Length: 331
Image 1 (tube, rainbow, N blue to C red):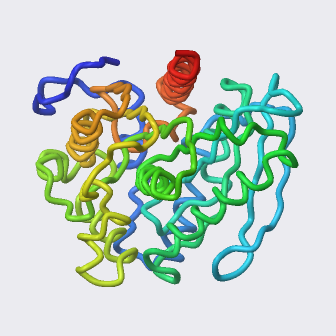
Image 2: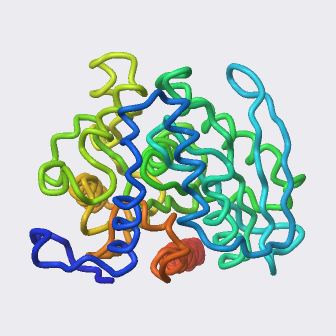
């Protein structure tokens, strides 16, 4: 792990053993790529593969599910109270799962939510937001915005501090977290942090990392295009900042950000570009690189320590932002 920018070619960084093992397991399984299937088939294949990637579920203080009113019908939320989290006034994290806006659910990212809950001694709220192509952009954005409002409005009931809410997500969930941070800024909703694992920030998919890592590193450029094309309504959506937060006019005033970038990932360059925009606009940023890792490495905890370590790094950054906020308030 390093904090310096990654500009080298893949040949200069060896694959992490964890990543190499997972890629080999994928090749041995010989499963067809998602784009060769229907969305429903891709969802089933993804869910069937999770036990081979994720470790044992560590216990948390409590887990509850509830249904709230969403923009177009009921939304299911799963709430994790971490071990050591106070019964009232706990920090809270809204976690938005990845999966290209097409696959993924509450179960697929349960391991990550448990880690966050325990490591941060916080309350994690995970929504089962609507997926494409049945519900195209901006359905997922609207669902996540509605969940943020619910968490804020029901802070006392949830036992959380409404001023200590952070958002987080991986890949497409990282995309939604960045968009939610922009919406919160515009709606004058305070957010403590945005914690992003290899976020998708530009639906144009033209960054050079799409060429460098197009094949052979897990998520391919072809698969990412399949996800994007199921999500958007038409080509005009590519330029909408709610799909491509890198295209937002300004990032000034958004929540401080933690960004984790995998070295062998088609999304690496747009993560770097988003970092640059944040820094240019005066936003506090903590960047962590895993040069030998692949896209989705936080979800492969069965095969190595880097997955949980990435969550630990995100929590450390969140705490750093909290201390900086407290100091600013005191000054």
